[in-house]
Image (tube, rainbow, N blue to C red; front, side, top):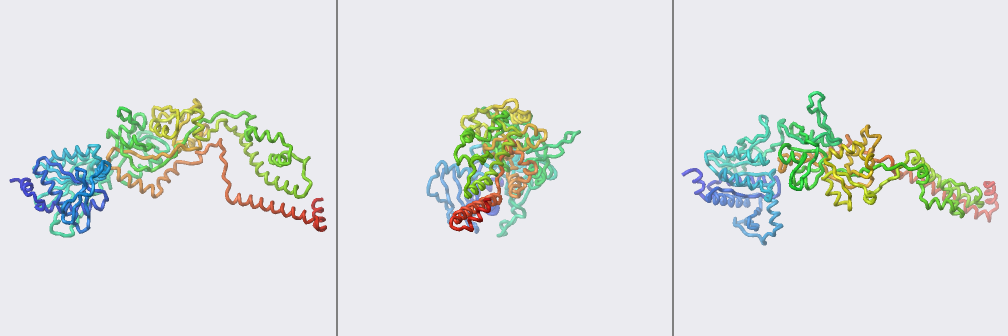
Length: 618
C-alpha cells in the first residue's frame, strides 16, 4: 500500500496531527493577526477518497482552531447559503437565518483575500487556477493564501515548480505550499526577486514545522508570509509614461538617448518608490502618448493596452481615476487631487469710449446728469464734482460735509485707480465668470474621452468636441488654439495651466482661466489587475502623503501665482487691522461732528461759547 493510500484509508485526521496543528498554527498566528476578514476554505480533489479526506481535515482544523486558547470564535461559509458556527462541543450549528442574495454576495466577496486550499494533484491545482481566474469569484490574488498539497506522487516537487510558475503568471505571490513528509510539515514558497535572478518562480524550502508536536508554545524562526518586495535587488520594472510636465520630466543623455533621470511631481514619486524597493526603471512610451480608452467593442488602446497586455508593469502620466480605467487596470491610492479648471478665450479689446464708461452702469450716469437736490449734491462729491455754489452755511452742516468729503476720498481714489487700470491694459469685452455663462453663450468644450462622462453628468446641454488623444489636445493648446477658434473652451487640470503659464515662451499668450472650478479630480498610477506591487506601493504612497512629501513635490514644480489671470485684476482683501484703523478714524470724526453739534446748541445759551465758535468760523 502506498503512502497516499495509507493517508486516505486513515480517515481520522488526527493521524496526520502535525499537518492539522501546523494549519491551526497558521490560522491563529498569521491570518488572525494580519487582518480581521474571514478565511476561505476550499478543496479540489481528483478522486472521491481525497475528497472525503480533505473534508475531514477541514473539519478537524476548524474544531481545533475554535478551541484554541486565544478564545477565537470561527464562522465559515458553506455554499448552500447558510452560515455555520462551531460550538464549544465541536458540533456545527446553523445560524438563525438563511442568507439573502446580497448577504451571500458579501460573504463570498469578503472571504476572498485569505484562503486555505487543499489539493491532491496537479490536476486538482488546474481546477484551483481556473477558480482564481473567474471574475465572478472575486478572489483578491494579492491576498494571503496557503495550499495544502496532500499528494505523494514521485513528481510532486516538479508539480510544485509548475504550480508556482502558473501562480506567478496570474500574480499570486503571497502563497505557501504545505506538504507532509515522514518527518514533518514543510513549507515551500518562491521569491520573484532575489540577488541571483529576477521574475523567478523557482520553489524554495522556506521553513518547516518540525517540533510542533513536542513544543506547546511552538514558534517559527521566520515570518510565515515573508515580505517578498522588501528588496527587489535592482530588478527591472517597465513603466509606461512620457514627458508630461509638470507631472513627469524625462531627461535624456544627448548622445546615447538613455535616460539620465526622471523627475516631476509623479516622477519624484516613482523615483522614491524605486529607491525604497530597490528596483530599476525602464521607460516604455506608448506610440501616440495616449492614456488610452476602452472602446465599445472592448478594445483597449494607448497606455492602458500596454498594462492590460502585460507589456508594462506600471503606468503614470497624470492619470485621472475613473471607473473605466479601474475596471481594466488596478489603481493605486490617489496621491494628488487637482482642480479641473476651464481655460477660456481672451475676447476682443474694448473701444476707448467703452473703457471710459465701463466703471459705471447706465443708471449711475443718468443719476449724475439729473443732480438737483441736496442728497445728489453729496453724491456728486463722491466723484469730485464741484458744488461751490451750494455750500452749507451752518456749522454742523459744514462739518458734516467735511467728514463726508474725507470719507469719500478713499472710494473716489479706488475708482480712479480701477479706471486707470482699464485705460492702461484694455480689459477684454468677454469676461466670463461662471460655467453657466459659458453654456449660455454656446461655447464648445474641447476635451478627451475620459472627461466626457463627467462633463455630461455635471453640466446640462454641454457641447463637446473630442480630441484624438491627450497629446493632440496638448499640442493644440500649445499652438495657441484660442487665437484660431474663439468658440472653444478647454477643461484642463490646474497643474497643466500653471506649468504652461510659468513657461517663459508662453508669457505672450498665457492661458485665461475661468475662476469657477469645474470639479476636483483624483490622480493616481495604474498597474495590471491583481498586481503584486499594489500593497507595497500603497504603503509607500501613504507614508509620502502623511509626511508631506507629495505637497513638497507640487511646490517645487508649481507656482500658484500663475493661475490668476492678470486681466481680471482680482481685488485684494483688506486686512483686519487696516479695516480697524479706517473705522476708528471714521468713528472719531463722527464723534467730533457730534461734539460740534452740541457746542452750537450750547452757544445759544452761553455767550463765551458763541464767541469761541465765531472766532473759529472767522
